[in-house]
Length: 98
Image (cartoon, rainbow, N blue to C red; front, top):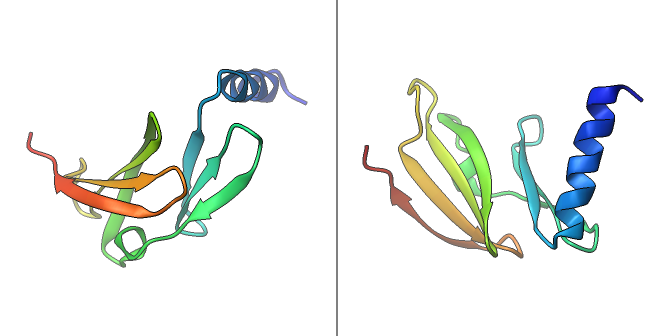
């Protein structure tokens, strides 16, 4: 295992120890992958993420909510925030005003 992989795994384990959710966007499957505190892994798929002209710029966990920053593929920055709960259920979205 490479040193970089060891550091990333240590950081991942530390997040789980601290009791936080961990999430990232899987571009191949067009879904958000969420790892819970107990190590359970699940995918969040939503029409808001899989639309053909949408690009996911980033995913963040804020408390018990999963936030996806999205926008049109031709944009250089996101213009919309989509919120899911920790079970992957769509809560709502809002525009980002810059």
